[in-house]
Image (cartoon, rainbow, N blue to C red):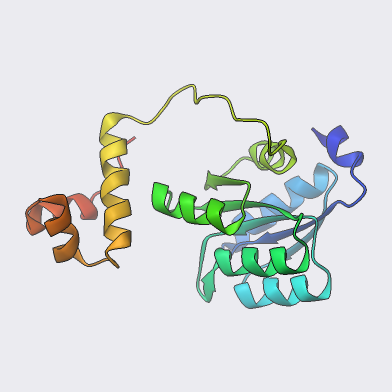
Length: 182
């Protein structure tokens, strides 16, 4: 995989994550694979870097203290439309994955993401369809993802979400309080 990076004319890559330890590990791993990495901790810093010199690649956290990585995707594509973006998040659900892809991200990975998976996603041919997952989501996980999507679409309003899902509000609150099933 490092050989594929070495063949690229522009190896500039922006890493945006507010988790300092994860950002440092990912930055080192991507530098070790041949990328020229600029690492930042906030949406503001990422937009400033993008305005000075938009990178060829970006790995962006979705949820940050000062905004969303989706704002950076928009700025990147204004400055450099061919920029390849991979979104990372610790709050993986289908709705946010769809939003990231609609904004222009190539792929969406759950944290903690392995550096090899990040590089594979960055260098993937956009016209090539990914292979089906070896271990797809369980039915419980699919249900949980659907509930999370409706909850997000309802602006995190529990009562409205429960009404739309035809579910008792307290039942929904118990589901939302639990961790995602495997």
